[in-house]
Amino acid sequence: MLIVTASDDNYAIGVITLITSITIHNPGARIAVLDQGISLKNRQAIENLADKFDVKIERHEIDQSQFAHIPVLNDHISHTTYLRLLIPALFQNEDKALYV
Image 1 (tube, rainbow, N blue to C red):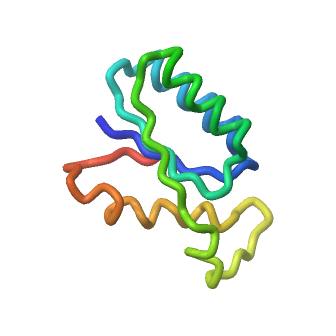
Image 2 (cartoon, one colour):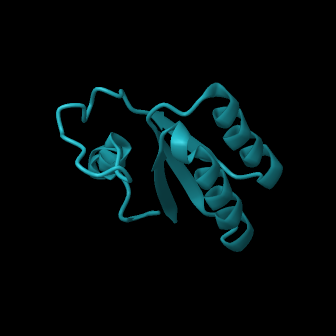
């Protein structure tokens, strides 16, 4: 199963925790991270999880300008929230994907 998540650097620690949980409880799951500004330090931490748990983690860098034209009206929402809208285009060959 393909599990997709999205993050910028503000939520990277949450994504690292999520990936750890997925790999422990769903061995064999494939993971894709839509990256809109994750720092090098946090990208390396994500890559370390791939090695530690022997899981493939795809990282897709998304240009930060992709959704810049869409207004953000709440403090708890960022442009990264909209990355889930790209899933059908990015994973056209998948029958299904779970977004977390």
